[in-house]
Every structure is written in structure tokens, then in C-alpha cells.
Length: 294
Image (cartoon, rainbow, N blue to C red; front, side, top):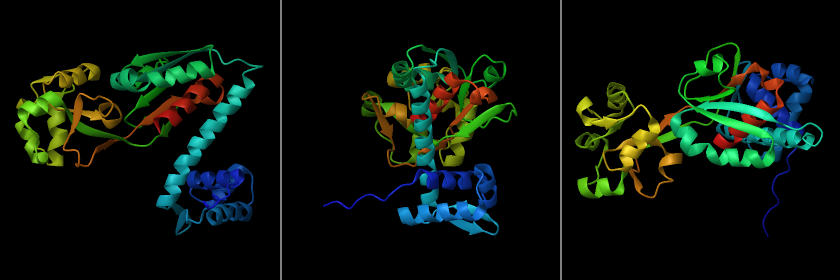
């Protein structure tokens, strides 16, 4: 007989998440309108319920343990799901309608986001979504988009940004390419192969050399600033390409090169205007993106 799962009190979860975000019990208590002892007891109760230590004390501040970081990510997903459910429940009296424009990279727009749009269509039939495949954060500042997905943290004060889980990029090549050229045995061996660049061979060289891959500009005979085109060049057997494993692993004709090599981590930032708090349709899409990309 399986043991019963640990109990879970949502008020304790809220206290924990506020403490994780604010860094101290006192600041979190002010945010939630609680006394500091009450909030401290709720966090301690959550630790007892789950049987793990969530915070370590660093002077007057608190630092999340590894278990705390993992839990915070899951609770944020739960909060986003609860918010979406509440929005949809209200939809009978106040329909969510209108258009939301999302700007994201061409790769994410083409290969990652379409399934989410299908789900949004089912949740909010009157909602329209336009994808703007671009890499310029100024699209958001000029109000040419409502939400941006980027790999750098925005610093404009009029924007709200949420850091999501880092993505993992790996080296890929077509099976035919590897069958004819052979497979490299280590990172240094990658220099014996042609690679696909994403518009800037020099940038690729500068990025890969510190990783122990001493490539030259001559290693990048083909490429494109358009990520979809660059990926297709790799699929046609013209060289090795770096791609988010969420995309690369979905293609049966592509194979990981050096599969045991540590992935190249890259940040994923979700950004919108401060009107996130006043626009129901933007809030719905923003939270759906956060849960989907996590």
C-alpha cells in the first residue's frame, strides 16, 4: 500500500513564496498583511508538512535551499494555473476577447509556441493571438507587441519581467551528415566539421572558444540570421547547428552530437507592460506562457 502524500496548505504555500521573493520574514509579512511570527509559523509548518528544509539563514536574510528553489518554481506554476482557472470561471459574465501580440524569436515562434495557441483557443474562443517573430526588445517598448519572450533581462522601468527556467541548447546534425562524416569523440573534435551560423560567424567563434571548441570563421560556411532557415540548413546536411533541445529532440532526422556533453544554458525572460495587472487578456496569455515554457 502506497503511503499517503504529504498534506499541503495553500496559505502556507503563499507565505513561503512571499518569503522566497522578498528574502526576509518581515518583508514577506508586510506584503501579505500578516505579523512576522504568524508568517514564520506558516513557513515552518510547510517545512514540517513536506519534511524538507526550505531556507537557510544568512545573517538577517534568508536563502533558498535547493529543495526551496524547486518548490518555489512549482508553486509559481500552481499560482499561474489557479489564476487562469479564476479568469476562465469569470468568463461567463465577462468574456476574454481581443488580440494579444507576442514577440519571440523566429525559432520559438515557429517550433515552440503553436501548441500553446491551440490550448488558448479552447480556453478563450474570442481571444486572438498574433506572433511577431523578431529579436528586438524595442518592439515591446514601441507598443508593437504586448508580451515579449527574450533571452536577456530587460532593464526598462516600464516593463515587468519574469525569469523562467533556463533553456538547454545542444549540438545537432542530420543523421545523413553524421553517417557520411563520422561522429566527433569530444568537444575539440568539433573543429573538424562544418557548422551552421546564425548570422554572425564571429559571434559563434567567440562564444564557443571559451567552451574548449577552438573553431574558426572557416568552420561556418553556411548560415542565416533567420533561425528557422539555419535549422533547415542543418537538416539538409550542411553542418552542425546549436539548437534548443526542446526543438532539436523533436526531429527524428536530427541527432544530438556529443550527447553526453553538458548543454549550453540560456535564460528565458517573459516580459510585458505594467498593464499586466489591468488587462485580463494579457494576464491570461502571460500566465499561460509562463506555465507552458516552464
